Image 1 (cartoon, rainbow, N blue to C red):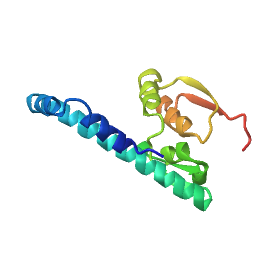
Image 2: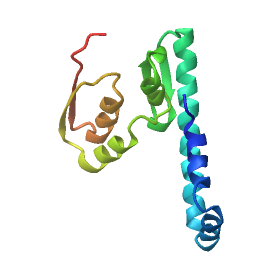
Image 3: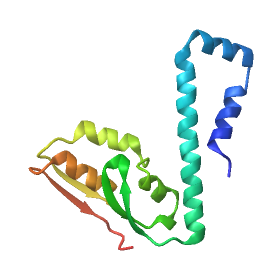
Length: 141
């Protein structure tokens, strides 16, 4: 399993290194982008390790507090990386951002393939008490 952070560091060091360093001295925004990229890659690597650990241990599912999403969810944590991403609130952030832009209070939303309910919980907050969310999961497991 290749680490994202080592891949990023290799790509940052590839090419004409002196030219890259000089460009970052002129434009400090590039350094900020580099740091953001490394932080995201480090978080991804740590979540992958967390998932692998719990898969190996066959850790039973339980209710977790998801701080980034301000909710609680039952998750079968030994099921793999995408469940671990839900655990830490990093699962499909662009989808959550898009929902924030589209869904308004009072909407009626139908979610097909609700899975563990991460989007269902988020949608219920967006539609508020005057809206409705109907979530369906066709796979019983």
